[in-house]
Length: 117
Length: 109
Image 1 (spheres, rainbow over the protein chains, first blue to last red):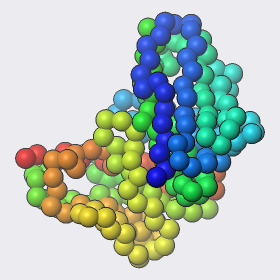
Image 2 (cartoon, each protein chain N blue to C red):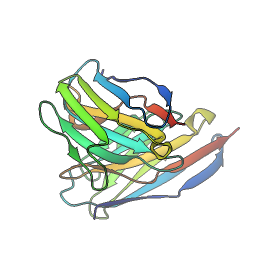
Image 3 (cartoon, chains in turn brown, purple):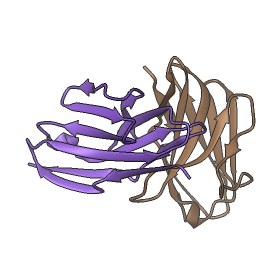
Image 4 (cartoon, chains in turn orange, purple):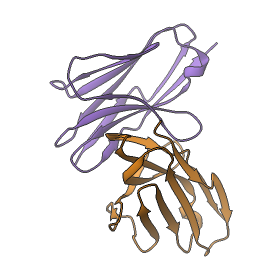
């Protein structure tokens, strides 16, 4: 149980384009979803927290207009990187917690590797 | 500011050895401490600890929390090459999960 999927698993795009990443909780209702970014050889850095049906809460230093987060249902959250630039290249990981998955336990998706040329 | 520190940052041992990974934290409104294993992709959940002194065990892995010392250890006995990974410690505070830098464990055959 507590499976989280992400799509796509990797994406390469040109500078200036927008990229959408989907995160789904497959077997539980995710009341809260989290988006992290991980640069090589570094730990996970929380970007934002989103609760179903409400606006995401962004961490300090994360531009909310650049990283658009939508959590429209209890099983789906999306992260859109708008006007991506090479410095946005990173490993983006979502996690989910909620009913059936353990309130304080976050289950992670497999991650999306974004490369911006 | 909430902080989680892991040690060592890197560890190389031989197959069959026992290893102990450390995690210390300074987090306001502590709720739980979690251990994850990260190989090539995203972290996979190992343990969640909320109570001091109660060992959690899963096969060759075990972990315990010491709330007085604000720390936790993760033990792996009879290590195997498949245990090679980055082990992440994270602490759930009032607002969010704060991750340590991770310990990169390499098991040589």
